[in-house]
Length: 242
Ligand code: URA
Image (cartoon, rainbow, N blue to C red; front, top):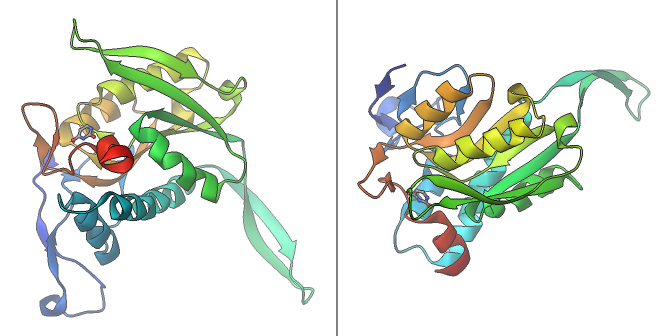
């Protein structure tokens, strides 16, 4: 895999002449078959610009993060299986369409991942939600599993793993290990993420080649405290408390 630095690029719409498109820094390009980065549209870049801004107030941070989360959930659902399904319209004609196949569950990595639960519920009515709490062990500086509560039949479901920030990948990797230990096959795990570091993407994508990551943006890197840069700060603090 090679990483390319986040390019400053003209951002759509496609039909505009290049000199009439705004420029913005778009996602770092990563080359993993199991990573999907959302299209870098003007809308997504504008939403990200709001939540990245240090002076954005909590109410706006929540509102605009929720819009990005909704885009991630909608894209994530495209990666779940469907089967052909023909319906009859009110004018008596057939329409050859699709229907979703298989049961799903959301699993949030607490606390920031809980912010993504409503976006999933808004798209998937009465979806089962599980939770995993992983925190840094102060003695070893390694991620440690503190708590998990998962639907009983989790092994029979497709799992949408929810965490908005993928820094080193330690927590997400541990969460997938927990899911696998409960019988969820790696290929039925889809990780939805707002902002990733190239290191986090690489660690996760190489460890779980059969899982998929759907992210809105891969940033430049990590600072000495493992914050994503340029990043958006502490997602949980900004969403819940600040
Ligand atoms: N978690 C966050 O909330 N922000 C980061 O930059 C990294 C991890």
